[in-house]
Length: 150
Image (cartoon, rainbow, N blue to C red):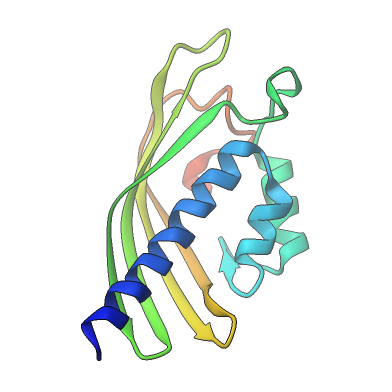
């Protein structure tokens, strides 16, 4: 493979990883569903069902733009491209602050992602979340984050 092509592919996949974090932090769960629509997330498939999963599990704060008041940090992404498929693993750390919860890390773990590529570009085919450490998620989730640990 052309080294420039590999760099471009890796950067495109990094952008997908970071776009997910940006959409979740913005409370744009329809956007999350659209981003993951061609893949699976926690056993859920399709834009609508994935968006609904986020709506029903993640608290949002209308007085703060209907966001979850979080920042998802995606760290140390390692991408392996093989033609029109790719795999990535990365670390995540979610921090949150609300009126009742001081700024703190609330959940840490790893993402394991797979991707496909077609004429429109790269897209998620699956995201697996391995939760490793859980702090106070009472102001963030309506479920136990370990439920997403596969």
